[in-house]
Image 1 (cartoon, rainbow, N blue to C red):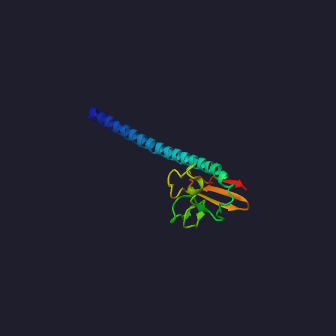
Image 2 (cartoon, rainbow, N blue to C red; image 1 turned 135 degrees about the vertical axis):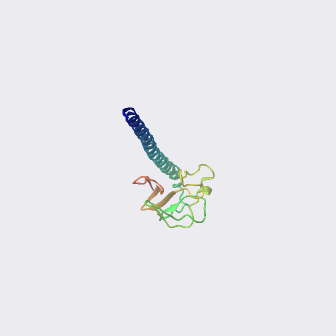
Image 3 (cartoon, one colour; image 1 turned 45 degrees about the vertical axis):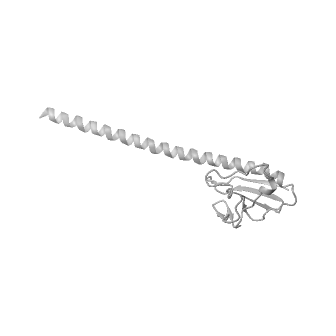
Length: 153
């Protein structure tokens, strides 16, 4: 009887250790995936930030062309002529068409696109001209504050 009781205790301890090991393994996987998601979000926002800076550099050359009529309300950059309205926590774009700068650039440079939702048709970046400055923003940022840059005229 004493041997069977000891055997039951050993089996119970072994099962408990196995369950603890499984729980630890699953918890470590969940934590790792949360960290990976934060890293992905951070790298996407870094790309978006670089995109805004890149756009500012490129648009500074175009801003000297006085024939360009810049929008006074946010307008998304891209090639599409429809469906460019956009509402995010950082942007309110009401324009139906995107602002197509391809003819002005003569293929000299390509506009950056948002890393998760952007395309040539709808880049995810928007511009507007207010009070002698051209503002550039990425609309899809996952950060609390969107990267925004201004060019003075």
